[in-house]
Image 1 (cartoon, rainbow, N blue to C red):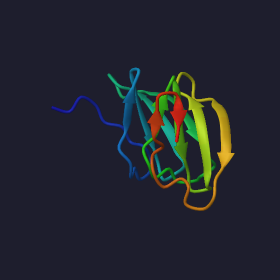
Image 2: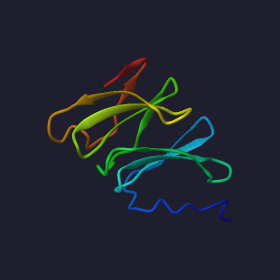
Image 3: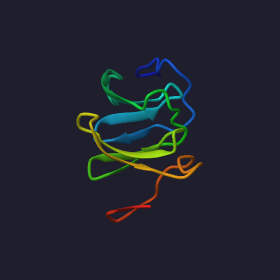
Image 4: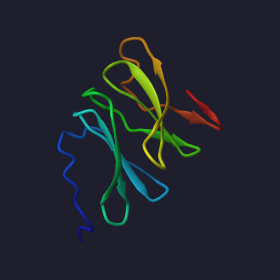
Length: 106
């Protein structure tokens, strides 16, 4: 039985991340979308300016970490979708999910 469905408006290539009552999913339209895990209702969306999100986000301490096709790595607060910081990477630096070890993002 299907609990709910969501039209992300774009291709989704990565596995959703489920944490703290949210489903976090990145799209090829350049959005990290946060959905309510029970209802599928949108809670917030973070826009990358059209840069594809190819890998699943990793979450640590209430912050989602991910890269996009513009070779920028981002940290976004999962409570409200606000960007905490960003870091420019070399080409291809965004193609996989970040690893989390204790309180370190690798």
